[in-house]
Length: 156
Length: 185
Figure 1 (spheres, chains in turn orange, cyan):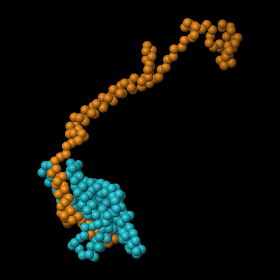
Figure 2 (cartoon, chains in turn yellow, orange):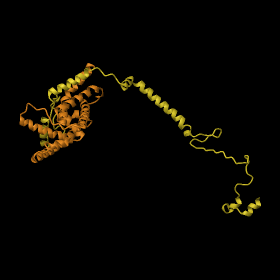
Figure 3 (spheres, each protein chain N blue to C red):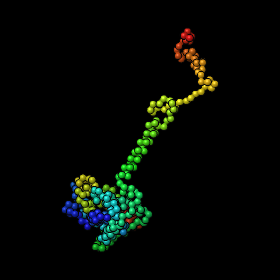
Figure 4 (spheres, each protein chain N blue to C red):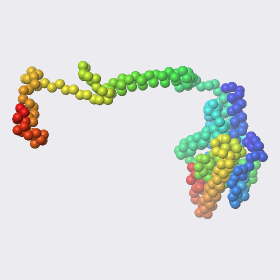
């Protein structure tokens, strides 16, 4: 059963590199080959019988994944197309609209990627009119601006 | 199952069955276990024959290796086994020598790396010529010769080391009763 198909080509020392101790090693290999264990013919016969029983057994009903694989490529393609479509929808709704940033209605459109916050400020009792006095008086900060106090007075 | 497929599987068994069984027996040391593991290997062959694409010997090796590894994983829960089918063609002394050598081979095989185990399996148990081993492994033919040579040297080294350990155990009164084999598994 297990005899080499071509005993002329099968040798233990085939392709060995030339070394001094090859003679001893070849003797060792021959001993090992002669003494290697083997299952009995009876045991191998039982293995063959078990194998034949398995081959004769009716095919087990396919489970869910077996049925799915039996449907073949059309199902795989449909799943792939569905996943791709879902990805495109998610990309369009989340990323293309500025990552979910809300822009106040009526305001100018924000450039892509820019976050815009707007605050409405009400002055109490002013009725929405601008104050009469300046918020900052430049003459108080002449040391910072370098503009002479007298000159500013002349301009006024 | 179709007749063509069935014939192919039976041919695979005829060509490689004994080699697989012998290697499994060399690794596990128990004829009963080796028969059960070999049967599992060939049941897997029947169930997954479609997966055999390139080299049947290489594919069989991967199944046998998986089943042997599973055996050693599960075996941790059981007591070590050391039973062997007696060779009725040999005398008691010859049988004892063979038994001792097979024990050392079992330990030494387990100590080889996976690639060396595969080469020893193909060369000694499947008796494949280098050109077929090259096809199954993807190495060049000349490389296979060098690697087999190296694997056999390593096998000899481990077997000689094991022989020394066994002799030392015997000199020490044999208290552990084959403790060398215990290291293997």
